[in-house]
Image (tube, rainbow, N blue to C red; front, top):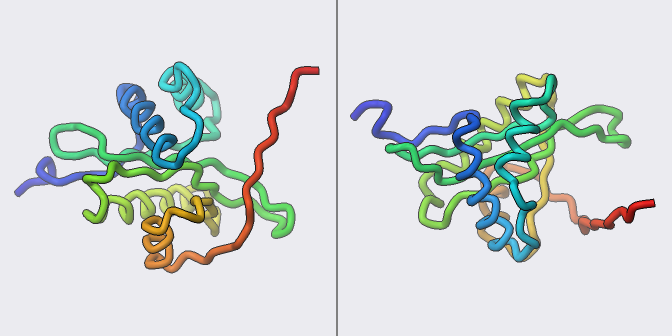
Length: 158
């Protein structure tokens, strides 16, 4: 068996973004959320590859043959209370048929490597309270839960 016979986690390239947009739509449906923005793939191209200093990082779990099984995205944020930046894991998603194969842990490892590369010492994220599978996964990683509710408020044009 050689390396091309194994799944791998790597940074996304522009050609991945249409598939990432499909995965993001599946992720939103799974989490019972509104669908992603129209033209998400093109928006991601702009954010990931056309900015002088991209805010967003996108990692993909690639199967042998090139199909994507999942993705993770993260951005650097600042914690006022802690007085320091941290990496916010915005999305982590694997298609159901690829869960339990170690790809989620490999995506998390890649996110942790991204945090280290940015000289950050913490990663934070949210998951729905009903997502028991994700909660078990994060607990097995040794992650610490903080009970909070996440809110969103649309900003109307002035």
